[in-house]
Image 1 (cartoon, rainbow, N blue to C red):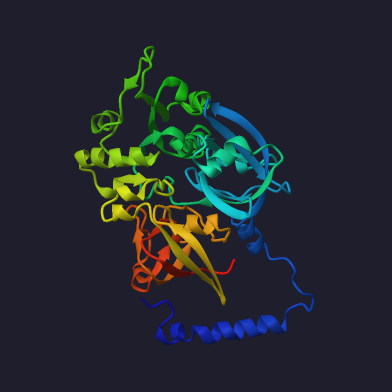
Image 2 (image 1 turned 120 degrees about the horizontal axis):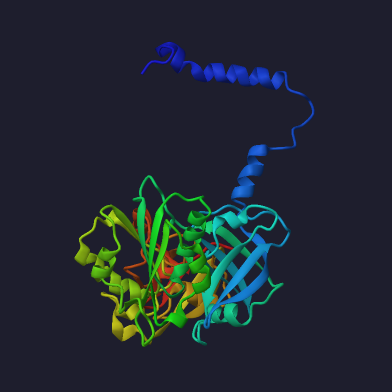
Length: 394
């Protein structure tokens, strides 16, 4: 398509160069020290910032909601309802990163009292970081974090106006964030959340969810355990239940524990939906890698030698076949950047120099080129022999 004609169009670069030289010649000798574009970009995407815990309150008998504000009092960066944040924890000699879905709405990052909240469940003595956050973290503690990660958010160009969200346990958190934005009139969508809990006392953020219900936000609670006084839906979330609360044109969002995902994969198969209509949130590291097809179960209890190369430096550490390379590195106090811990973001991209590994089939988010050239995501890769890897210098 001609704009000004062929010769004028292809000669555009020389005209721009001439204009730039004239601008330089006529410019003030006083240097420009303010870059407004950079300031806006930094405000929206500052990377890691220092956060301080300003409030901790119960969300149910086994969950707590933790509020963070910027340690320097600045406004926190924007994020989209459904995204997560990555927090860094200094425990012993290790700096360990963990992702948490944000349970507060993005509207709370606006204004002088800017904050974000996460809601976490006790690890019952089995999960190091969950137990640390639940039992040890206190108001006034400081840590670094990165806000606004992940692709688990509503996008009107892709998603239907009517959304049915399926949640279990603390998987309610991204949907609480969405509901908050809808209730404030800042997100134009219709949201029905089918939320599975063991009993009515196990519902996380129950009182807060009630306050968010309205014309375009509904919570359907499904109780699977013994609760004789419960009057609502019972059992597990099934294809029939999903269909009951769906519209003709619906997008489905899912967030919850891995056991729930394994169950819902089969239920969605019964509904025969287009893949683009079903979106699963990343669920973190696999709890038991041995249950997946292709994993040699006889190696589950083995421990191998892992040689870690960083520049010209090498460390030799133990690595369990049942734990990811990222966990082995963290146990040894070797820093590796992690984000989603679900094999998708690529923060922990690692070069395998030698040895055999198994990649989680539900967490392999590598690019095709990385597969061709021997790169792996450490959070989703498990050693099956003595291995040698190369990681970035932190």
